[in-house]
Image 1 (cartoon, rainbow, N blue to C red):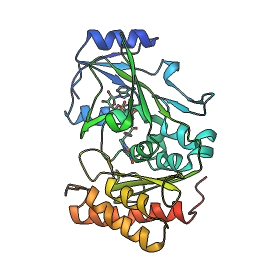
Image 2 (cartoon, helix red, strand yellow):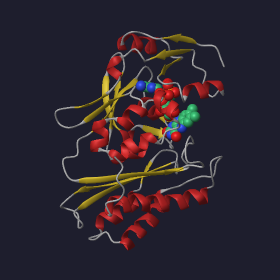
Image 3 (cartoon, rainbow, N blue to C red):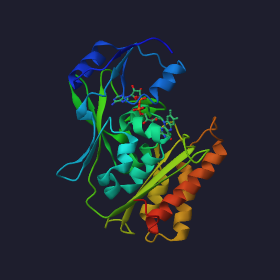
Image 4 (cartoon, rainbow, N blue to C red):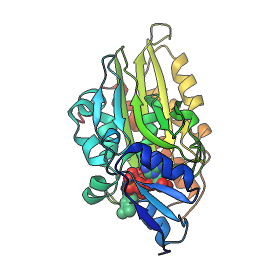
Length: 292
Ligand SMILES: Cc1cc2nc3c(=O)[nH]c(=O)nc-3n(C[C@H](O)[C@H](O)[C@H](O)COP(=O)(O)OP(=O)(O)OC[C@H]3O[C@@H](n4cnc5c(N)ncnc54)[C@H](O)[C@@H]3O)c2cc1C
């Protein structure tokens, strides 16, 4: 492990000031990605700025408009057990339950999962279909970015030097909707997914079926991708029959550009895109499983 300075400031301002003044510093949340990368010499920060004392970055709240704001330091365990998330978006709570083991879920945070920038990150497909917004703050500014504009490559995000993610916001959905998440790893638990998929419909009287679909796929491209071809096909169909689901799942292959790597082959990933998209669509169109 390379040597580094460790600081754990008491206020957000102190953290942001240190990050601005030390270009070699990195924010430290649960450390479950960062420590592994440091051990492997993939990154060598000169300073770790531990965010853990900043209460403002913790917890889940629902605002007056029904938007859910999840602090960046909220752990996967907290999200997966949160009554408000389970009530409104059970498929997202379900996604967080897939992360690593109980120990990893107790330490790993949503902010770290997003900022690590992995296309296999468990939370991302659900956050894409929910149109989540990322709240960012530096010592001199605050801004909000749609999650779909946040990533620029594997492990690469649009975070500027000195900036941190403070929260993830899930905008309220005021119409009827249904969502689902599926993933496949090499083992049942404690493994990074080979492919992830999330799908959702929202009530939309302007579309022929009365439903507007969103589908996102992970680990099949440099960043999570929106399955535009499959979405467009579904959004033009008047009925959602088994044949339509079948065709949509096949169409999702056009949206994926997987590679072969240590986890699996390109061909198997394509098979999984078809299978997982179909499972998600069956869940949301046929009523599906009870995830709560
Ligand atoms: C055994 C094991 C199993 C795992 N299984 C899974 C899995 O199944 N699915 C999955 O998705 N992940 C998995 N992970 C990866 C990891 O646990 C998650 O990505 C976790 O959410 C990372 O959060 P963290 O708080 O530990 O981030 P950290 O390791 O602290 O940070 C990760 C990166 O994000 C930056 N960062 C952290 N917080 C912020 C912030 N608020 N603002 C700006 N930058 C920030 C850090 O500087 C660092 O670059 C696994 C890891 C391990 C070790």
